[in-house]
Image 1: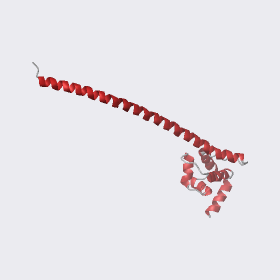
Image 2 (image 1 turned 90 degrees about the horizontal axis):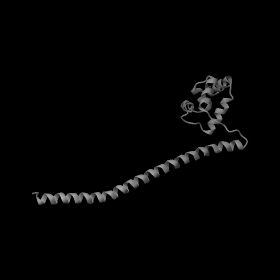
Image 3 (image 1 turned 135 degrees about the vertical axis):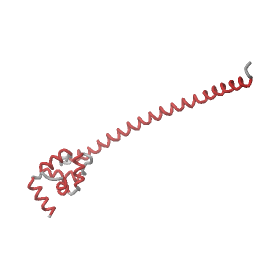
Length: 145
């Protein structure tokens, strides 16, 4: 015949497990709901960040369009175009940097597409496009000497 103490102990453990399970079920449901809410908020943040990025890009285009409307032509920059221009003139990045009044590292970063020149620098690059090899060499002589 089983011991009454062991039977009571087993029954108490079973009831305790049942109560604990009931209490933790509500916590599990709340936790799942919170995880869903967090995921929803993350998706919403991502969508808003993308929208801000798109609006920022559209905002960057607006000044160029405004300049075109004012009668001037909008200047565009191309990393490949700058590299091709430098090769056409037969100049090093340091020489181009001297002509533009910037550092050689800036020219390398522009050509790699890591950074973009400022508007004033784009205007200087546009004047560089109009130069011939002789004009570029003469201008380097002026700036160097």
